[in-house]
Image (cartoon, rainbow, N blue to C red; front, side, top):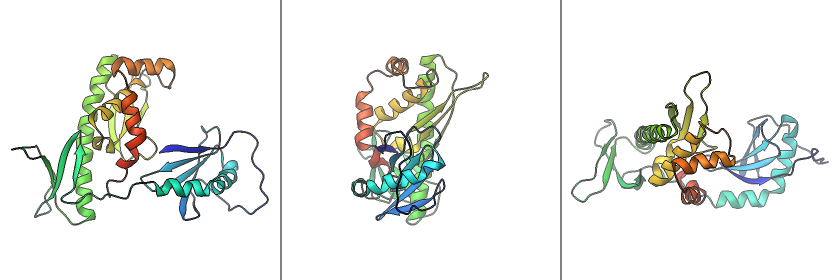
Length: 261
C-alpha cells in the first residue's frame, strides 16, 4: 500500500455530527468506496492509504480513541479517495492467451486439456516461454498463481542469498506472501538466530532489476533496521544506484496488483 494522505498530529479533532462506532478492522463506505479502519500504535497521525489489491482505502489511527478522527478525515477526503480508486487499473485475471512478464521475460499463458499440475516451459524456436495450467476461470487463475509464487520464491531466495553474502550476513529465512502493505519486510535475527524476510510474490511480475532492488533493500535491513543515511549507504554498497528501480515501483507497482484471482 502507499501513503495517500495524512492529518497533522495534535489534539483529537472535535465534531458535532454523528460518528459510527468503530473498531479495528471495520469497513465503512465513504461514498461508494469501502474504507477499512485500522489501529497502528506506531502511527504518529491519522492517515489514509490505498490498498490496490483489495481496491479499498485503509484509514489508520494511532489508537482506537482516534478512530473517529480517521472517519471524519476520510469523509473530508471523499472526492480525492474516489479519484484515487478510479485511477486503479482494471483487474486482469490470469487466462489462456494472456502474455505476462515473469522475471523480466515474456511468458504466454496456455491451457492444459486436463487438470494436471501447472508447468513452466522455457522459450524455444523463437517462441516465448509458456506457462501451462488446467481448470476453468478462477481454478485456472489459482493454478497459475501458485506456480508464480513458487517461481518467485526460488528467485527471491537466490537474490537474498547473493546480497546476504555480500553483507557477510547469515542467510535469512525467506518466504513469499500476498502482502498488501509493502513489497517486502525484514526482521533481524535475535540471539544468533537467522533473520526473516518476507516478499510480495508479485515482484516476479516486475522487471528483474526491480526484484533485485527489493531483495537488496530488505537484506540491507539485516544490518540497519531503519531508513537512515547509514542504511541507504548499505543499499548503495550492495546494489548500486537504486533510483530507477524505486521510481518504477512508485509509477508501476500498482499495476502488479491488477493481476491474479
